Structures are given as C-alpha cells and as structure tokens.
Length: 150
Image (cartoon, rainbow, N blue to C red; front, side, top):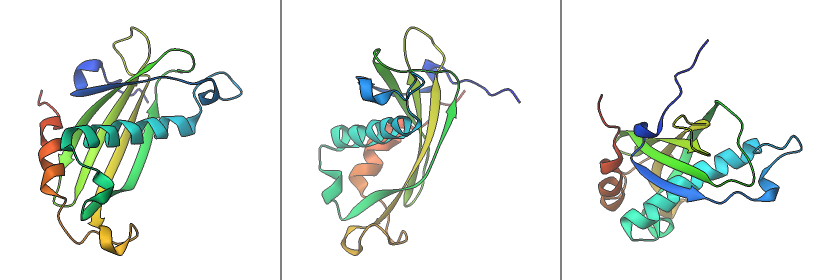
C-alpha cells in the first residue's frame, strides 16, 4: 500500500544533526535505533531552546509513551540530517509530535517519526500515570508548532 511521503513544507521548526561513522549499520545505512535517537533529540532540543529552562527539572516531565517510524528511503553517514518538527496535537497532559528526517536536496522525507510525550509528576518518578497538566512553559513553547491547516 503506498504511503504519503511528507515534504519539507509539512514541518515548522528545524534542526540539523551531524551523522557519525558509528550511526551506520553493517549494510551502510543509518541504524534503526539512530532514527529514534534523532527523534528524541529533535523534540527535547526544541523544548530546551523554546522554553529556556531545564525541562528535566520541571515539576511535571514529559516521558515517551509512544514512538514509531515510517521509512521511505535510506540515509546515512557522512551527510548531515535535517530534522523537521511539527505538533499534531496538544492535549491536557500530552503532546503528539511528528519529526521528518531529510538528507540531501530532496524535498521528500527519508523517514518520519511519531513521538508522544505524556506529562507526569516529576516527584513520583517517570513511571507514574499522567496526573497533572503539562507545565505552562511547555504548552506555550509547543503551540506554535501545531500542524498548519491545509
């Protein structure tokens, strides 16, 4: 079944990551685990920069409740990877992100990740169920990333 391949215009915020030799697997393309590291980096680096605070020290912290990846073409060392970020939904205690990975001049994503943060009380440890809304500073930082309509 064909998949719609996201394009650069589907994302709002951008960050570039340098690939490393060790990021490739034995077949010469980006290791699957590295895609997830890039998703985590795109989201959390954005949060650090946009909020101006250490998000790990907030009274409520975002823990990853769900991740997935759709692969469209191979990417790997040595070219940098551009990571596009957009938010599909901001809930009471959760945020749904999409992260597009691009390498080279192509307008089409090489991969797209789905990344869901659920906010929990930081004093109870990261294993707790959501019990409080996300911090206002986080909500204010992610609302501008909401998916553009159309």
